[in-house]
Structures are given as C-alpha cells and as structure tokens.
Image 1 (cartoon, rainbow, N blue to C red):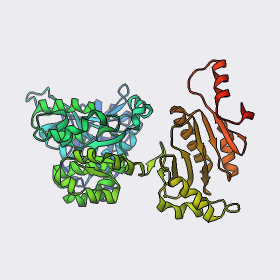
Image 2 (cartoon, rainbow, N blue to C red):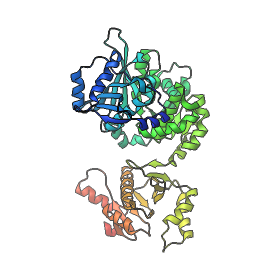
Image 3 (spheres, rainbow, N blue to C red):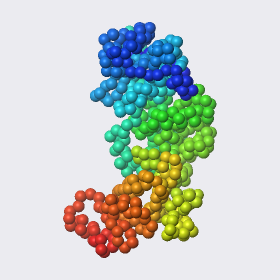
Image 4 (tube, rainbow, N blue to C red):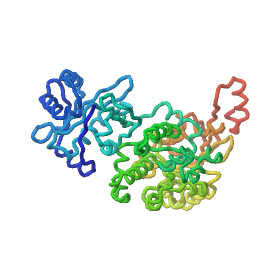
Length: 507
C-alpha cells in the first residue's frame, strides 16, 4: 500500500521544487538508505509493513528514488517495482517528510519515474480511496482503470491508477493501416459519452445523431484519458464498472504528457483558473484533443460551447454541439483538411496551400534562373483554382519554415501525376523529398493508381536523385514509375505494363 502525501500540484510549485531538491537513486551502499527506512517507519500506519530485507532488495536493484533537500535530508522517497512480464512499473511507496509537505516533492519524484520508465508501457499503483488523494493522482495524469475491495479488515476500496507512456501497440498500428483511419477523428466529451452509452439520459437524443449510419464512414469517435476520471466521479460502483467497459467502444487518444502539461497551463486562465473538478476535467479534455491534433470536439456542455470561439482562434480546434457537427459537417470537414498535420514520427507538418500562401511560395520555390515570378505564380494559382482535381501542399519544419512545395492529382484515375515538386535550401530537403514521394505514391497505389509521373520541368539535382532512388525513370520530359499491388503472374505483369499509360519506349 502506498501513502502519497497531500500537496500543492501547481506548475509554479513544481518550478520551485526543482530548485530546492534533487533526485538520487538509492543503492545498497547509499547513505540515504537508512533515512528511507526511518521515513517509512514514521508513516508505517498508512504505508503498511515493509521488512528491511525488502528495502535492501529494492536498493540492490536501484528501485528507490529519493528527493534530497539542501541540508542533505530525505524530503521524500518513491519505491517501485518493474513487472517485466507486464512491461510496466508499479509504485509501492510514495511519501514525503512532514516538514517538506506541500512543496511539490511527490510530483518531482513521480516525474523522475516517468522519465526513467519511458521504455515501459506505463506506471501503475493501487491506492485506498479513503486516503482522499485522487486529485493528486489526477494532477499527475494518472487515471483510475478499475477498483476492488481491499483485503484488510475494513474492506476499504482500492483504486487501480494507471499512467500510459503511449507507445504504439498492435491495435494502434492496425488502425493506422486501416482504410477506416481516413475518417475524421472526433473527440466526444463526457456528457456525450454518457449519452451514447445510456440512452435513458434526458438529453441522450441530442447525442444519438452521432451514431447515424451515414456518418459512420465519415467520422471516428474518440475519447481522451480524462474520461476515466469523469467515470470515477460516479458514486455508484456499478456505473463505474459499466463506464470503464464502455470506453472500449471508442478509440482512446494517445498524447504526449509534456505537451498536455504545456497546453493545460495555456488553457487554465480560460477555465476559471481550473480550480473546480469539472473545470479541470474540461480543460484536460481540450488539452488532450489539441495535443492529438484532432479537429473536432463534441459536447453539450454550455460553458464549453461558450469558449468555442476562443479555443478555435487560439488552437484551431472546433468545439461543437453534436447537432452542429452534423448540420455543418461538409463545411467543417473541408476546414479540417486545411489544418496542418504532423508527418508521422517527426516534427514536420504538411498542410494544404491556400491563396494567402502564394506570396510566400512564389519567391521561395521559383526556379531562380529559368522562371519569372509572374509565370510561376500563374502556374501555382492554376492548381489552386481546381481543388477537386489537384492537391497543393507545403511541408514546414518545426520552425514553420516552408521546405517542400508539391502538387499532385486528386481525382480518380489510373495515372497519378505530380506537376510541381520543389524544395527550399534546407539540409534535410533530400530526405524529406524521398519520404514524401514514397508515402504519396504508396498511398496512391492503394487507391488503384498504377502509373506515377512527375512532370515538373524545373527539378533540382537533389530531386532527380531522389526519384532515381525510388525507381522512377526519365522519358519524354517526365519521370515515370509503374506499380502493381498484389501477387501477379509473369503474363499478368506483362499485360499490365502493355496497358499502362506510359511512353512506348518504357513498355
């Protein structure tokens, strides 16, 4: 049993704490081991019995973290286990010395454990509910995943808390490859979640529109980890169990802890300082949604809807009533298409080009010697005026500097054309070009495109090298590649090549 001490959990407190204390790992020869054992003795009533041999065993494995004060006293300690078969860490003790309470010591210890265990799936713990420290664990971004009756004489309820390191699992990887992943992600607030899982609620009909058959191929409903905290507030144990089961009906967003932490600090002033439980949960739901770059957040909560304009202006997230999402879906979907999207596994962002981007694109991507600005601008605008036929895109680095500008065909056809493929002077431009052409053609091939052609007449040497590496060949003032998906016989392959819309010299 663990006994974390009650403490302030604000960001300012954490900053002060980091200056007052430093973290060390306790080994068998550490001078702090005896102080840890003594600190356990003072809180044994809540921490529970723990033999000295067990302390020594954890010290031998370096599984004890201590926060050391400036006077070299132990301000607090965290003792944990690592379950190799379950690939997770489990907190056994977390406690703070009486004179160091309310200084952020527990948060500092937990944050250090998070960093130390990033290679694991996550961190778990069990805590008695009657310790009344749920707010603290929630502030550390832990959520209750199940509960059970304790084995003690009083049978007190034990809550199982979990912090997820958000590694991809087999399910999330399968989702990324599933054609259904093309649906627009939409986060549902707790009130909508409870409506959809309990049709007897007073306003459940308002949320039921999200389950219309015609919408299932267009949106994918998601929940954030904060939904577990919302479920845990129910006073009814059966409702809690049902709610945790119902979470499995929806995709659970995976978000970066540091990003969510930063967004919460930015959002707090707009949520009455986030001092009430409901405001804190609302703020966290929004922070997770923004961190995951999901375009829509659906809620019936009036205060949340009143903040919608501010949230959209600052973060580009549309906060909508369920019926508003349905009524305006086509328009909203088009707006979502223009939001920057992170390229998988990197800090690069890809977004559709608009007319307002032309003044940046023309001078940056025009061929210096062979093109006039006016002619190139006209070329760029020609594709922008036909969005149903052509997709114009720009990729920026972490500093929002445009690095690659390219245009590709957007209509259904066996031929996939890239009429513009340009890059700025950037050390990673070549690598990025290879990635973009590879991923774009791979995705196009999945949609029955068989022939790929790059027709830009002002390709750089770097671009040509990238195309050659990716299997393109040059002919008739263009670069060509034929691709077939699946297993074909020699005759089927020969027939496909003969029918392909490529120059005769390539057949």
